[in-house]
Image (cartoon, rainbow, N blue to C red; front, side, top):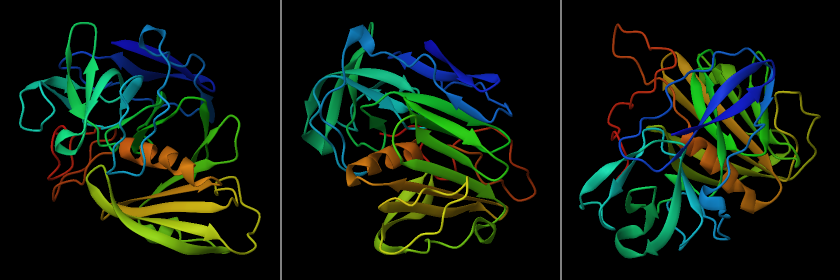
Length: 297
């Protein structure tokens, strides 16, 4: 496994980027840094000097006929590598979150599959874009914040007492993550000056939530440092993890094609699951939530 060093202000975190290998476990290091900002200083390159395919996934649940380039594993619990393009075929191994897969083919069978290879192993992984992306990422880890996530190469983050804000080094869009003891503490859904355009059900690390997309239809107050900028669209997910933890994700963007930046982000999030009665969550731990499969497909 290769590891990408990423500098976070005054501290240094570790981003997990691996070539395909069997039985690879997710990066286990936890970043407890109190640094206020960060950006990848040595972005990952593609295997064998390759370039990204022009094909990009649509919304979660659809697939694309990408037949070359790379896919990065988003699934926090890893992804099964199979011997054929079917969920009933032999499992050859498990590929960890953050692993770069070299795509060598695509099949439309059984919902869509990518044929991928590594240094010594080839196999098939599902083409569901909920589990992989054609982009490179850096791993954000924070025990105090209570979550881990992959954010896009070329993005940076800033931290305050109330939020973590991820944004590209050039471009106006931003993802704002807030955590708290309840949804009430995190504020009401929506935002003044925006009208609800659509709602769909999504899953964030085993928790079912609503993804609401708003369109700007009026004037918007000047945002604070922990609020999304007043762009054309606002996507929002709010959900309770358990009786003492809640999370809010806001994504401000102008181009509808940018929404996949948000779906990749929330598809990669992990956090300690709800505690059993009488037990306390383990900070920084990311075992599967109740009912979740250890690895997708």
